[in-house]
Length: 556
Image (cartoon, rainbow, N blue to C red):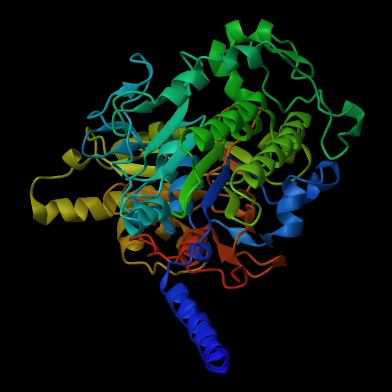
């Protein structure tokens, strides 16, 4: 009997092991997906900043992402205009304005005959401050986002939160189904939301706001993080190409914020200093804890958009000490964030990507003084001159309704009611405008609505970028592009962005953590490849309008 038991014990043990293996295989493998995805968009970040400032970065911020993660060295926006709203929308939808419909931060609404914010929606009210700008929602975004698709896949159990100093930087990444999006209110110095998401702020947000951190940050003095003589990667601190804060004679360190805030928008001043990134990092930590993100088997998604870099970059330009100092401080924010994620979610249990919504042009006056072709262009001047020119052919008729974002909107009421003649008038007016545009300094080319609508979405070159940035229902009747180095601006201090040239399109694309290989690639990739890459990692559908492709070099 004893021997019989011993003989039977072996097969039973093998059978038990096999059954455990089979039953285990039937259970959902929670390690198939990260616990949390963190998407970071840095407003106005050039790829070259990673190289130029590399030696001054610490070991555990940007360098950790580069050395332990994957860096796409040749990542670009594949459309124009390269501005904040379209950029955030494109990163998260995997497509371009031609499809997702966000054609600008503010754009001329042809139907309403006025400018609209890309995230405005009068159906909703502010939450957190009744007097704030909170009539906002993602209603104008025509495609789903990766965050929406995660919500759909998990039957809405995944938590999705967006945080930014800018409303569009929080709202567009978080998508249509987010639990919440929070942005900075410059009137109160706190984070607010919209009734699109909630009727009142959660307790954790109220508690966070009660710390009055904006006041604390604005009581500080902005000095350089390192001794100023070490900022050899930047130009002189006293530069004629930088805009000054009101109440300060020079654009030089130090900046005593407590003395400057009264003349510079009070709480609004914070967004133009690197301390805004500190504030946002703390808000991200509060969201992680308050929403218990990354704490269960269902993947959550936290969207962070750092925008102080944009405000400082616009005012000071990419060669300023202020921009370099802002990035050295952001490097510390990234380090702090990674440490927090390691502790709260676990090393290797989260996936993080970092990119930018656009890059930036050099200050044109600086280029001109350095003998590089550049210049300034005025939309209002163009409109006056075009009206004068067209009146020579059509006296008493005004054909130009609006010129903005390098688009010309024609006044449809100025054309004949008779379809037999209105079509010919439209053709002739368009041709006359095109002829005038090509005679102007600073204009490289123009494209009519017919040309763009009949164009190939996959076309190369500047024309292809314009096609991908053109939405047939929302964009103008004629689009023009400026020569390299030219800006729509009237100031010789500071700079901007928006073109399809590489100085505006070449941005970082860093991937780190769960499911990401270590390495680099110099293969060309579009910013629209980020969403399908993350979708593939999460094993969920691509966003509904996605035109990008997964980056195969990155995924394990």
